Image (cartoon, rainbow, N blue to C red; front, side):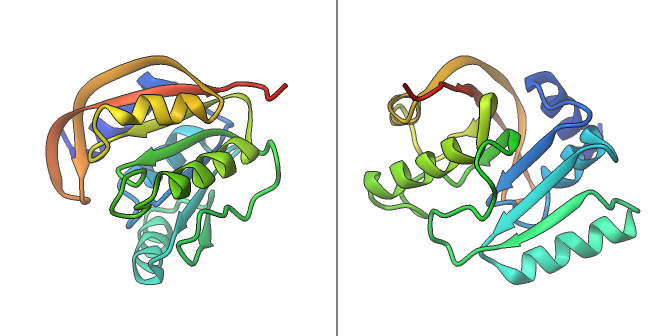
Length: 177
């Protein structure tokens, strides 16, 4: 089975749907962005956020070549800040970026999770591939006012090329009281 087809099926299984607005935080060259854009279709949108301009250029070129027009590029400086409006996205992909390499202090990861909470609609899905986070992932995310819904095991893509077995943790946003 082709890699993009595997990713497409995984994203559908975890809850990405037609017409949604999806944020791919730390999207890299678009391993998950392009399949998400195909799922959400022309009435949806995928925000591709990354600090590496070269990989964003590569992603946008791939999208143009594939005739995909519903991806919006968001360049960032690597700070845990997301240039989107409050309550504006239905799903957030956080695949292999929420860990100590990119965010060495728990306080930095907490700031990122607060930003994700801010841009996510109530009950938005937060899809996390905690590759390098270990057992702390679920606790940290739940402390940031998300609740755990379920997990999906399967073949995931790491570093845009390596197939490996892993779990995607599915959370939803809690309303802050």
